[in-house]
Amino acid sequence: MKTTCLLLTLALLCLSEFSLAEQPSGQPKEPNCAQYLDAMCPRDYNPVCGTNGQTYSNECVLCMENRMKNEHIRIRSEGECLE
Image (cartoon, rainbow, N blue to C red; front, side, top):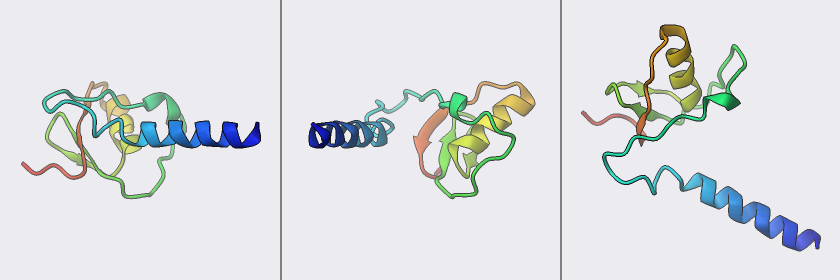
């Protein structure tokens, strides 16, 4: 039973990691800002490209920008913006 739960958890984790990669090109993804309610973002570098053409160091920083400026920037792609 424990093994089954562990395998299911790992499978769900893998699926969630590939969710950005499965977005059709041209289809921006909504950032998951509900998980970043703290005033501080982690300092990890996991860049995302916003729909405004700006690179954010991680999804949390994009969410904080949306909150501070009352905007609705979404994730255009994972990684740095190329344009």
